[in-house]
Length: 141
Figure 1 (tube, rainbow, N blue to C red):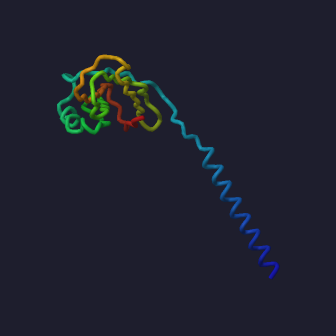
Figure 2: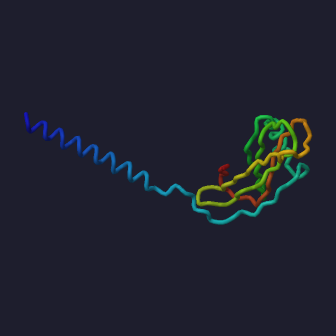
Figure 3: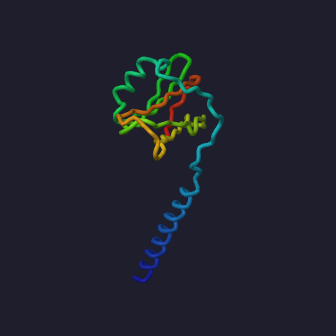
């Protein structure tokens, strides 16, 4: 009887040890993406947006969107921040780079400064950038 308890304890401790080793191993994985190179892009205005992309943007402008569109030689990346109560917003591109597994694209919406005179009508801030076509998925950050 005593031998069965000892075996059960040893198996329990081995199981717990394997569990913690597994946890430590997972925690040590590298989660950061390795940046290969920055991607050159141009912020484009409404007149340069392909019609198909613009139509989708119009449909989704109230809720906001993160879209990509590609043609034979260009990749378009679009981010919309949905309906804002006033005008005076701007969007900056924080990052646009190629990593080993995808293109990473990040933006920031900046509101009007305190005391700044703005239109008191709803606005739908968005940004569209155009880059050379790369056959990778886009991760929005």
